[in-house]
Length: 130
Image (tube, rainbow, N blue to C red; front, side):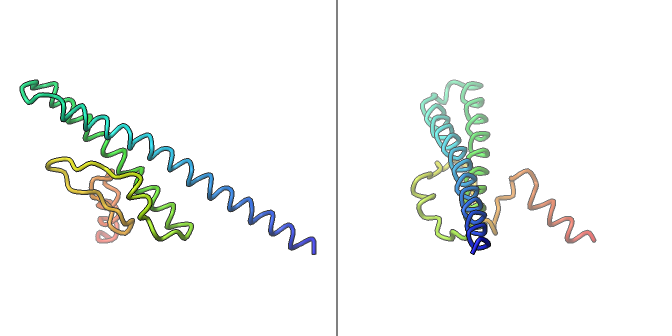
């Protein structure tokens, strides 16, 4: 009987760590989600006549979009890894804005956006070069 109780303890610890990791990634996405919407509001509010100011705001928006998309992607990957396949709630809670001229980010981990630090392209080069 003692063996079953030990196993349950280990399973509980694993479940706690899974929940903690989802929470950490979710909080990170939440921070980036707020930042990207704030950057989008600042960029949209800036008049086109602002020149360099508008350009800097667009660069900031692009950078915050990269961070938010990567955090979103990481959350989806983590959810997939622990067996949660329905990501509808994530999409509802953390919608990302559409930025003119920027393709939408991938939602499914199997189809990553090519802009993620060259990860997809680098992996493809390794597979085809050998």
